[in-house]
Image (tube, rainbow, N blue to C red):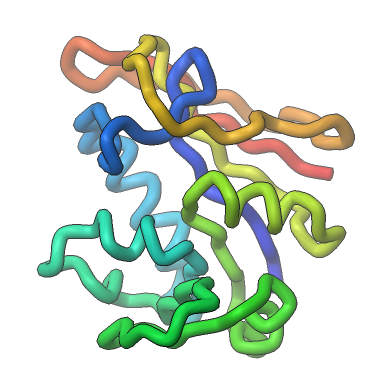
Length: 163
């Protein structure tokens, strides 16, 4: 099973502002859906805050198994709750891929684990003054692809990093 992160970040590694993604990039949403759905046997892992930031009509994300990493006793209709990153690996066993989709704490937890070998990074060429950032691509990962995109007034690159 491939284990990776899928991240969209601005120039300053910003990933959210006021609990929401501050840009609208239809090409990135298509890329995200294609990567995380795969052939229909993929699992996504997100933190509670990321789950809550999804519009209700998209909860759970369709076409993939949804896991929510949370230590609080809470219901996540249509998703399964896990308490640790290791528990998410066990829950995703048999999936073609486990994609960590946010937020910053879950990204950090996942990157500390040796099973994570891929980062799919949408790098947005703008600065949105985000109040939430991820740590960025850590040492030990090498860029294997960078595909430029333009989506309205915004542009950037779809990057793949592997270790």
